[in-house]
Image 1 (cartoon, rainbow, N blue to C red):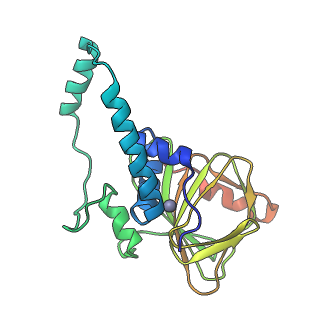
Image 2: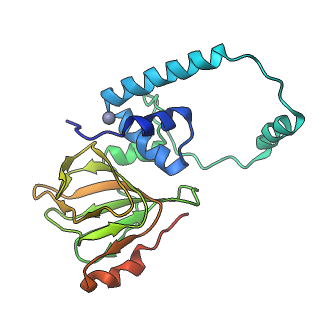
Length: 217
Ligand SMILES: [Zn+2]
């Protein structure tokens, strides 16, 4: 049962196509598994379409037309095989991760409880990564220099604000402080989008900061 969802602003931006690639992928993956948010996104799309239809046609200048035509020559982005029954817009690699297939990811150990796999997303402003923390493992208290978007793919974790489970979608903002602890029952795996590195508060863990530089690839 999903209890935490993207807020209306975020779903609106997602539906309008104005989110950066990595954040859009994270929201898309939540929505593809959440009936509630599918309903909201559907209504917003219908609303957008009817507003669009009501617009008066406007002439397009040569510069704009040339910019669109020039995109035909752009390199085709990387693609992953999609199963025939998958009709969503979510990237196939993320659908695979949501099903729990983490088999070919390469991991970097950060301390004894956390390992991270960085995904190549082609978004220069955001880091997209899979975090795996062991059952019962705790990430030391840290603050955020920017925003952090988290989608739980497996297991769950808790912090001072609540307890979160598979499918839950969370946003932490600049200055938020927390120390997530994975639930005891199973390992916790999350998809995380960052626009700035984390910062650990306790001096004992400051050594971890260099490992958590933003990796945008
Ligand atoms: Zn939702």
